[in-house]
Length: 608
Ligand code: F6R
Picture 1: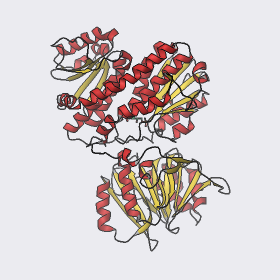
Picture 2 (picture 1 turned 180 degrees about the horizontal axis):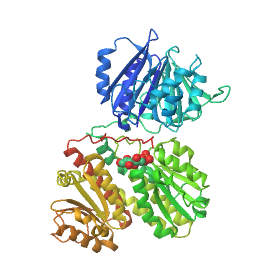
Picture 3 (picture 1 turned 120 degrees about the vertical axis):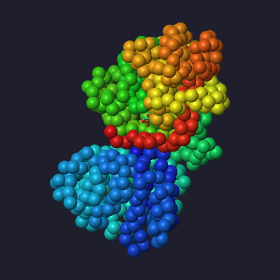
Picture 4 (picture 1 turned 180 degrees about the vertical axis):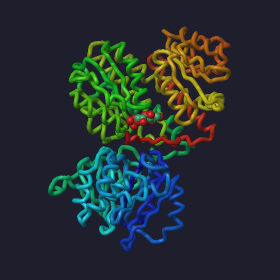
């Protein structure tokens, strides 16, 4: 969603803001803008639809004077179309403001402050800027506090006041912000990628606080009567800038597919002790596994698909109810969870707003929460009772790849530890389970090495408007992710179906040459899946079959057969995930689409 950056210091602000915005491009956006506080204290605004490059070209032509303080924004439209006017920053009198999030009561505020004839954009954000301008009487902290008291919704704001040159103010409710004071000046941004070129030390802006940036200092004030000064909890970035660069790969997605074996090792190996899963470093106590009588998994999108796989792995072993819910649904249900429930929250970004709301609901129900999160210090990580950090490093491509694999690795380890603690696994069984998990890593490498031939298979689906993914049991859970990956970056309408369910309606859509990607890696349902494949084949479908190396496959069954190594049935998701990711990647590439930044999508979904 929207990206935010603010800079004040000795360097040329426009250069830092434009570079920062380029670093935030991966979040997904449709327009970009900057506001600079010029030497004469006048404000210079530049806003353009389209890529940051358009804005950069425009700024190169238009901005000749230098500035040392400014704010920049990439907008993902929520209220109002994609136009230069709707792009941020918004100026209202002395106030210049950028916003990430949604102001839910913007309409009521427009009426209350009689703004109808003043507004020049259709955005909720401009309403916030105009209300703030009305409240501002020379004291930024007091005005911002009054504004916050009036707002409903989620937001992070970065604000400049025309009569406060060199200073930037910021505040957040839910939507994330990180800040740092560095020898090159003070910076604030919606995520770390914009700060990393200048520092490794930063802090997450706490809610209910106002941050003030001056060229060499960052001050933090509580929102109490006297604006008490506090000191932030400093954090250190555990990856370097290289991790956020393409490093010779044509796309971040391909690079991130390649990084999966290492990411798996980084996530699994530090948590193995004498062959057993050990979470003592994570401070996750066994008591949470001992006492729980049910597990509720909550997430969105790909993270939710990881949860579906985990449920299929854990439930037969643990013999307790395990439910997987889509966060945006769960948060408005009356869930059947209580103090005996373990709620596992899965999120790469740790900022997905629906997932965060579900976490808060779980706490209201007095359940214990365990978050599987990739981004250190993110809101979900901070608010959960316990955190299992995955070590994927930054994931820049919008389509999740390595974050999915390590979420699975984390969930497999959690399931294994829980089985051990609950007496469902002996030590020997747990050691063997982890051995199989580690064996999945070379199996992923084997599939990455076959990327060209998998790319050729993708050529067969790019001319079709539809594709189907089918499988049974675990293979069905994998299919869900395969279909999501393909549709989000190739724009081919893809559906995942439990193979046995096709006959109940969907098979009507199968006709000549419709691609069906059939996954058949589960021995106990293998022959059933093969029968379902025959049914679609008989209706003319083009079959791409994903099967194990040793599986016996009739010569005429599949048009293309992609073989994965013979790992144990419970672990086939890891090589299968690589194949599905590569099919989607090459389909997008061959259709000449924007692989890393597909249309309409954002990396971190911070609005409902
Ligand atoms: C798809 C994808 C999304 C995310 C979803 C949740 O490739 O990346 O479906 O998985 O938006 O995001 P996080 O994991 O950040 O909560």
